[in-house]
Structures are given as structure tokens and as C-alpha cells.
Length: 205
Image (cartoon, rainbow, N blue to C red; front, side, top):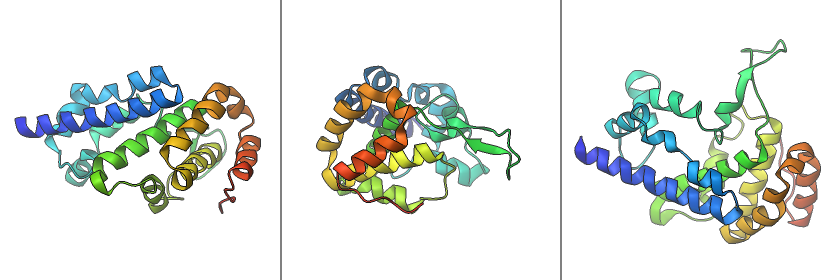
């Protein structure tokens, strides 16, 4: 157990460091520092250590063992960069009664950095600039994402996939982060404009 706890600590700390680097590169310093701190709390850390495997999230192993992940339920309610944080009861009469709320742009950017870091940690030397997009496409359409969240995340992932991390970070740093509130309000116009500028065709819904 001690060895697994040490390996789990190294994994989550490496992941946090990579996300922090990414957030710092685009100017999200506070989010970079605070990212995933709940993973070090007993509710998440000890579960993660127990189910540590090194090749995938221990949350999946816990789900397979007991049918759900207690660590994930604790985590998603405390970290705004997860789209699950933004699921709420709907006032409309819809199936399931739950609906996604739009994520603020700054948290979509952090989610992007989170996905890149996770791919780097778990794929190791096999990581490429295409990894995050490939992983996203495996589950595309299954997650209950708000249309704004989906459109913006896909736009950022496509930038990464086509132009690489350095150019994508520079774009986000100079054209997105300083205008987060404007992107929140006029996201459709911004995404359409920059898709054309960056030669990225519209994706099918």
C-alpha cells in the first residue's frame, strides 16, 4: 500500500504540475495553482492509492470494484474545470430532469489543459499533439455537454491537433484569456470567426 500511495502521489503531482505549466503559459495563474488540490484530501487520495494502476485513472478501477467512484463524486463537485460540475436540475420537462449549464470560458481552457496533461501522463512517450483529440473523439456525443462547452472545447482541441501545443497556447493566451467574458457572451461569433481564420471547418453536431 505504501508503494502504491507513493506512485499515486507522483502521478497526481506530475499531472498537476503539467496542468499548472499549461495554465501559466496562457495566463491562468490562479487556476494553475489551485488545480486539483482536492486530490490530496483523504477522501480522494487514499482511494486513488488503493486503486492505483499507473496506466489509467484509479476512478475507473474503483467503479469496476464497487459500482461507482466515491473519489470522483468528491472530486467533480469541487473542481469547476469538469463539465460534470455544471450539471443541474432543469426547469424544463426533459428526459432525466438534468441539463448541462454553459461552462465559463476560463474553465473550458483549464479543462483543455487537464486533458492534455492526462494524455501526457498516461500515454508517456506515445503522446503526440493528436492524443487529446483522439481521446475526445472516442467518447464524442456521449457526454452531456452544453453546446457552448462542446463547441469551444472542440475548437481548442482542433487547434492543438492541427497546429500543436505552442501555437495553440499562444492563441489562447492572446486571443481568449484576456477576453474571457466576451467569449462567454458571444462564443458563437468568436468560434465562427476564428475557425475561418485558422482554416478549421465546422464539425457535424
